[in-house]
Image 1 (cartoon, rainbow, N blue to C red):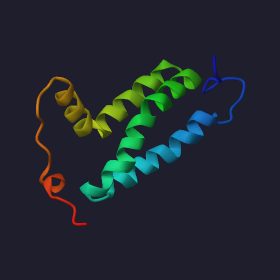
Image 2: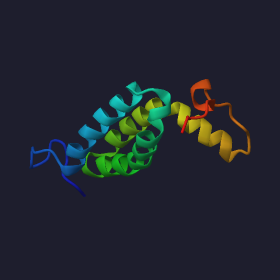
Image 3: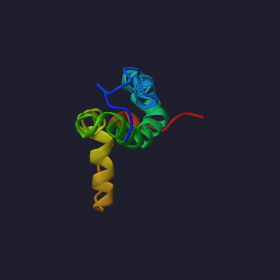
Image 4: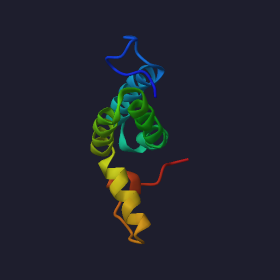
Length: 103
């Protein structure tokens, strides 16, 4: 198993070092206008489960559970959208995303 939080080595693991910029990038992405959130948001959404599992492996399953709760809290609207799409429903988009982008 990976290094534990209070194990023999007190240094941060690579998973924690990568998690810090991920959190900052998520916070910055949330502050962007809705139309500009899509690309970085999808990348962060895809990377999150891998990072959460990696953190759980290195620091224990409690950190994985905490990371999962934080992930669901931060990405609740996109997750609701994808869940509705998976159920065959047609979820409503925010007005900002309905406008066509001028070329």
